[in-house]
Length: 480
Figure: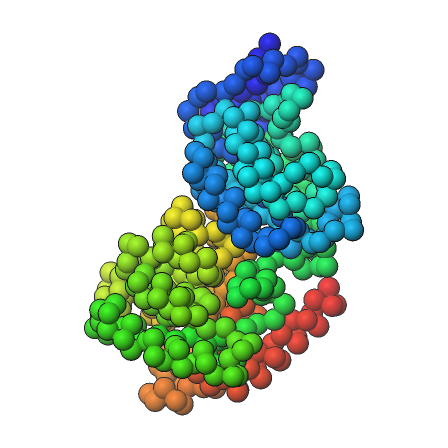
């Protein structure tokens, strides 16, 4: 008897698919297995979990992902990155956990063999079950198939009890079920409400941020739990250095000229004693500038074009292994305020859709979701009313992105309303330096809407505003 049974026919649609999958799943639990059977069909979508708690955990992840790509596993989506307390065997170091969605032509046992080879080549040996390991790679789902043999069980039999597996798995989904394969994965869960219901019953988002599971972003040799407090860019937590003007109608300079302007300043800033605990981002849309700046010591790449003005940027960022700030903008600084680029029917929904498109391209280029920071681009391709809608609509932007990718919806949000022209228009303040009170109001609204990083000019006053906002949010969370 065949080892695998296909669980879904697309003619059933999403609702019918769930019923069909569940019925078939129940019927094949008692099926005999034939280990020689493999699935050699068109590309199969798979989910693979990653874990590491020995050595350089993040480097282990990066190496494993590179080896997977070289072995015929085309990664399309990444979950968020979690630092978690060990389970089962608790006397061992904390783990990093995540998961990826991928497409492969490998049969399930071929895929298992490839993953086991990667584990061995990266130094994993037998050891204690559930004990320390440099890398752990598990197949959670394989296409629309339920698999049972003495070597492989899919879905992985312990998904449902492990928050450290379920959290990154959920990140790989959207709130909208976008394919029959994903519908099948929901139907294979042990909960009648699918994976979402199961995750909620485990505790869902309430588990994140507690001692046992932290959602983190890797930066400068440490894991940044960015949701704990609002960070201030421009002198407090992060210094953003750029040598190319991105104001409306600014003419573009070459990458060579930008480097000539940038590098001496960057080197001087990095040598300052007070910079020891601060982060430095390079504001550029040129891949060559990003590369050179990171080599000199920059910790983040801040790209106002989200990869649209240099076709090499996303691949370059993937190779640099640093966080990437992807900002929403239409056109370039010379065209972003054109009539066509200012046309929105629903600015928050459209900004979310266009940002997700950039995230998707970044992930396909090898930039994991756990390294991406999103910026809705206040003042870029926006009218005054659009900027106001964004400041009050950050939750809408997150929820719209969540329909397509929960991982992207969890990304840190950066806003930069500081001294922007729209504030001057509202307050009748033509001089940029007179817009600091309006900036504080905008920053406050943004933080209460879910912004995690704010870019400002007047650091002292805005830092105080941020501290008060964070204190109020903390008090609210205690009361809840």
